[in-house]
Length: 259
Length: 379
Image 1 (cartoon, each protein chain N blue to C red):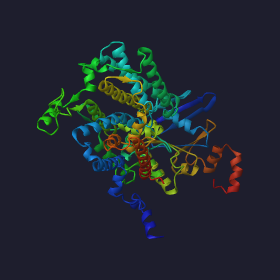
Image 2: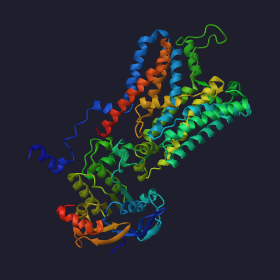
Image 3: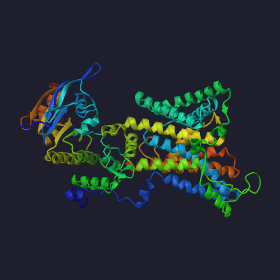
Image 4: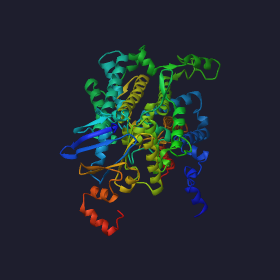
């Protein structure tokens, strides 16, 4: 088996006296969609923020392509090829699609002593990349606020892929979306994966995870409950692990298994 | 299944959502941030052209009069505009104007250093305070409204205190003589294109003085450096905001600081630099005023912070940050200057100026709210 794109070993994170993560290990292979499942408060957000360089782990190690790395800032992680798409923080609604697409990495054009944004290039690339993901924009100056939730996620994913992400972290990309938008986003994840990018898909919706996931890791109370490969595990088992056991099993009976 | 639904389900058609109407060019023009201020400028000019044309408001002297006043507003509005787009306010601008002026007078008149040094010292101190404003806002996470409100009082109090303990007065005069021949004072207090204006006087485009010690000279003898600074800052601010990477970061920091941080935008640095730029603009204003009046007074700049913010809001910026235009803010400042001086030329009771401002502010905010809804598609 090849080396993982990124491997996190025994990550611990303490906020004062609160232990948010207590030894979490996850690895992501190229072209794999690794689903990270867990209920609210399980430590999913803290974990991906550690992976994205927003938080620094209190203990534990991160390896990229087998080499140990340390991310002091989000920028370090971005430069190492880790891109994160946050559920509701992906885009700035008042800014144009182009300005959002290039935010933090604007293409520059030198005019005399000064550097300006190369808007010709920026607009062309934005339109092309969006078309590739199946979204036809009216114009690149269109504000992101005019796009639907699914389209915004897609802009964010397209942006990460364009900027050479090796690992793409998606934080609950489908939780606020309708059925059709969800299937669009899941289809986008599939396209991205086929390009050899490792996808970390965070969700608490087992069905969405089962639809695209290759491997599944369940977090509970800051710890890994184990990793399973596609086909080895049933949706019901994952569901139970996420909730930590029996309480949900009873609930599920009365609801007819539709949770 | 109806025709429309079948269409929407086919993959090729999916990208084009039939529920989004094509946007007309008129509506596109409507959601430009500058729209309100452009309309305002046109209305204000038509209004005063009708009621005050025979008062000399549009003679060369009259034009110089309201241009200078507008330029004063514009200088502080550019700083306030960029800061507001970056998502913060600075209520200490007015006090900063008084404070910087007194620093210049103290260092040059009381301590006896050359004028250029006094001006540089004032810029350094003011921008350090701007930095402190920004640092406190970032570190404490408090709204900039509160932090800079504190500095509104701290700086005003310090200004009066420093003036009183060193000179026993709150006005320090004689600065003009001290600045005579100083290279840096000329950058803030001189005039340019004086040769061009003399020539305009000679050919009779501009009236010349007929008597007194300036006989033969044109009544408007050049473009004041204050106006040059205003135009320079407007161009600088506009290009910075719309054409550069840093400008994109200003929008991003104000639009959603967290999203910007996640994309690798150094939000804290952007915001702190904008606080420093606002302080820089306030000090440009103060220096021009001190050199022009020849004195510094502890009560200079009162209420300027609000006038700057009103100019910016009339110019289409959103109080919540992330959206706005330097050109709009400059037009807002122009409206301000023309109305303030226009009422004077028209012989209208000058207290009505404030009534007018309040009404204008209200209209601008209502229009801006509508614009924001159009952009984001929210109801």
